[in-house]
Each structure stands twice: as structure tokens, then as C-alpha cells.
Length: 443
Ligand code: PLP
Image (cartoon, rainbow, N blue to C red; front, top):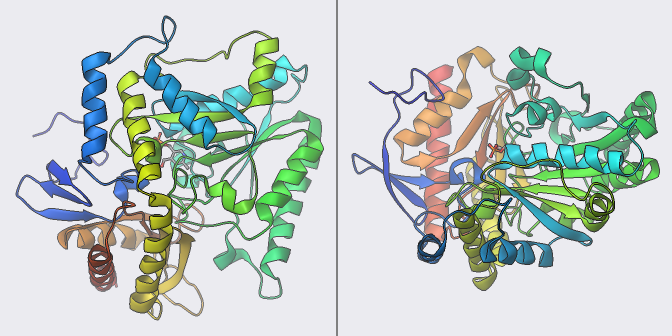
């Protein structure tokens, strides 16, 4: 009997009692390789001594001071660190307690920016289908996952959704990746014209789509085209790197690889690596300047923003990443991971696509490889993959609805940046076994 309202009322979850390095341990002593970092969170693995020491030291100093009354040294240091490593022009960090809160704050910052600068007629957001931006009402509204939105639709602000950048399924055979990207930019341009370019607040997108579509990177040039289009209309670009950011793709920010600088950048999971709940919005100086010249404040706030222990954990995580050269390690181990995935699964009859960047990889499962036909969603292949993986001592992050919120299955991998070669071998071997067993179970 449990009094915890778990995600699944019928599920019987193992009890996690310990974690060290890339492994979690349950009460029965079973070890699980955390090949997904939970949900792309645990970038330094579990029990990292330097992070724990920084948290202990902060607790002994000051755990909490409300941000209406005080700032803390550690919040200031974390903001300095983030701004020093941020894309050009970012001047401030607004701290929150997770990804959804970061997206909510970014949406409100964007709206307030236009109120402060005399453009209150801008009231629309445009985002993409098959994106995930969080489960609070604003974030859910911009998110494009039908399954998550459906029952809450009457409560959501109206948002225009355009196509995701989903090369495996949507690029036509007669198109180059560049032409496909330009077609998508044209679709966005048409949506902007339809709404009126001076009525749109922002375009919101994950730089690399994570949970709902399985590590979908943009085609070259697509986000550059989006940036130019937004600039032409004075529309803000909000990039959501809650999942794909903070080193996951091999650069600190995924947008660095696109040569694109957003107006607002949301970060969370890898920021604190799961040691504390923390997220942030990084904001361009001109947005904060507009607030300073206008009402002198950002009209927002939560009780726990800038929590000192959360900031201490995040600062320690980010310092370890820098000190230990972990971005280079993400790139190296990422190459090792994809080589192993391609060797083990590249010719698999039910693996349609292997895609991703750094240590962030998606494997799309199909019933028929040539026709790219998905499995019957009623069979819940993704749930079977999760079950079979856990039975093999492996945590991965499978999801259904890859294609349109209903059809399609994928598995997301996001191992800690400290993952070693032998662990990569074990991850791929166990995953291949889990996929075979899951397909056999639902066939
Ligand atoms: N944005 C993206 C891109 C995400 O992947 C997620 C969570 O998976 C969120 C926002 C929401 O973050 P949280 O679950 O911390 O609220």
C-alpha cells in the first residue's frame, strides 16, 4: 500500500536506495546502469563527491533566503558562471526550480518585453508539433504533443503549431536537407503572415527535440533561417534547451552548433544534474534593459527561485564539467556510443532510425523498416522496452507517440558524461537484448 500518488497508479516501482557513478541501486541490491540519466538529467551520474561537498558546505552556511529580501553569494556566482559561458549578448540568469517553470518564465518575459516596449498587440506564440516544453499550463500550451494536451485543451492559451524538423519522416526524397529546412522556414513564414508579423510574441522550439520525438536534431541551416525570419518581424526566438542543453549534445548549449543565438534560452535538467531541482532562463541584455527602463521588475516569481542549495549544486556541477573537460568527453564517448549503436542495431529489422548528437541519441522503432511503418500503438512497444531494459539492469527512456502523439515508438539514451567504454558496451548489449525481447513480446 502506498500513499504516494505515483505517475502510474498501478505500477510497482523498485525502491531506489543508492547511486554511485553511472549506476542506481534498488532495495534488493539490484544495480541499474542509468543510460538515460533519468530523463536526461544526471549528467555527472550519482553521488559525485564534489557536488555533494558543495551542497553540504552551502547547507552549513545558509540554505534558504527569500529572494525578495536577499541575494546569496552562490546565486551571484552561478549567474556569473552561466553568463560568462552563455551565447553572445546574454546578460542575466533568472533561476527557477525546473524546466516547466523555466518555460513559463520565458513566455512571460517575452510578453512583458513587448508590453514594456510599446507593442502590447503582440499576443501570439508559435511553436512546433511534437515538441515538449513542460506540463504547466503555459508550457503545455506551447508544447505540441497531442496526447499530453488533449484533455487539458480547453484550459490552454491558443498557440499556432507548425511542423517539427523531422528529417527521417518528413524530408521528401527529391529534397536536400537544405531544401527541406527552407520549406519548414517557409511554413513558419506563412504562419507568421497569417497571424500578422506584428502580433506574434515569439517562436518557441527545442534546439534538439527530446522526450516526445527522440533526439531530433535540426537539419543544417533550418534554425538560422528561423532566426532571420524572427528578426525580420521583430519576433523573439525562445530556444528550449531544458533537455538538450548544458553539454548534453557536446557543446554547452546545443544552439552553438547551429550558429544561432536565441533571445531567451531555457535550461534545467543538466544544470543541476539532478542533485537539486533547478532551472533557469538566460536572457539577452536588451530584454532585461527594457525591464529596467520600464517597470523596473520582471512581473513574476516563486517562493523557491534562486534557492541557495540548488544554486550551490548547479555551480558545482558546472565547475566539474569545466574542470574535467567533460564537453570533450561527451563528444568522444558520444562517438563511441553511436558506433556501438550502429554496429548492434544499424541493420536491425525493427530499427528505423538512429539519430542524435553528443550523448543524446534516439532510436526509432518500426514494424517495417522499408515502409517506416510504426507498430500498432495499442501494443505499447515502448512500455515493453522499458520493462525488458529494467529486467536487464538498464535504464533507458522509451516513449510512444513519436510521430504524431499516437503512432511511433522510440528509445532515448542520455547517459552521464562520465560514462566509460565498458559501460557503453553493456548499455548497447542490454538495449539490443531488451529491444528483441520487447518486439517478441508485442508481436
Ligand atoms: N522542456 C523540455 C525540452 C523538456 O524536455 C522538459 C522535460 O522533459 C521540460 C521542458 C519540462 O521540464 P520539467 O519536467 O523539469 O518541468
